[in-house]
Length: 366
Image (tube, rainbow, N blue to C red; front, top):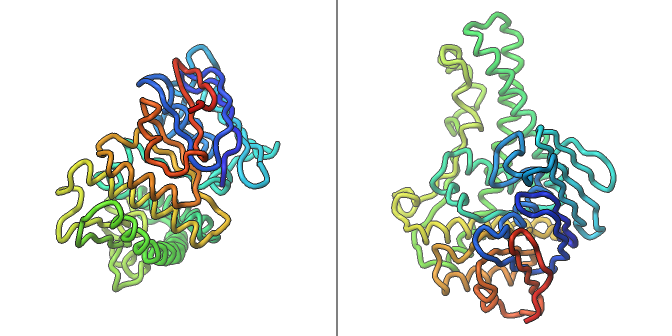
């Protein structure tokens, strides 16, 4: 999808800014602390209902000091859907799509597949399995129509099963059996979605990684969260006593992980910071490429905060070249206006925006 218009009000130090982004490449530049990352953050709020930098439910760090709420408006997609997101200091949020109130954030995500590559993106290699599950589920969500329903079934069944387990004894074995069976059934389907997606994704990842690095013997392997030779229902039955003692479900898709290795070693343990960033970028770009392959009318939006950090000019150039070959809308931040401009072949398809003290000026004439 494409963001055609963007109106930001009260996001951190940005009081009021209006942008008409380019269809392909947008470079947002300015001094450190000027507010350029807040432009990317605003796009993420518009498309996900939340910031990628703050997890506070009160929104107090997001909203400009002295204001009670922030708002981000945009026109998105081929039919220019009018989308608005507001977040108040008391934690009350509101989402509207084409004038209609929406309660499910997933409705925003469906409109605009967005990938963020920033300093936190390293967590894909070095962070907990939850980060890699989120990465995997992002990909499945955008290509498998039935995924969201199955994922929600898993979450509901797991929550209810764990609630029964926390009591320390099973006073209602019929209810326990019902939630265990529902959890196992939905989890097996979720596992199928994840496995199928990762198998398709792997080749695109390998191809893109080869364009960025000379790393050999690189592998991704999926671990589903329980014994691959047994059904989850069997595993849950065998571990029920342990689950009751600890008060939670030990096995299931909530324990799944993607193991990322170079040879026999965990990639995060032996790669340099720059190499880690290239691997993460390759994974994110591969998801965008996979999306285009299986959903030809869906464009990915890439938000890259300070791309040159940890990368030399050669590798920065390679990343830009791959992005230019993709049918995607790209937003990048940097300090100097010429820092990224030189790496693109078709400069006519680039818009540049200058951010200074929270003020965003329009396209820079070169």
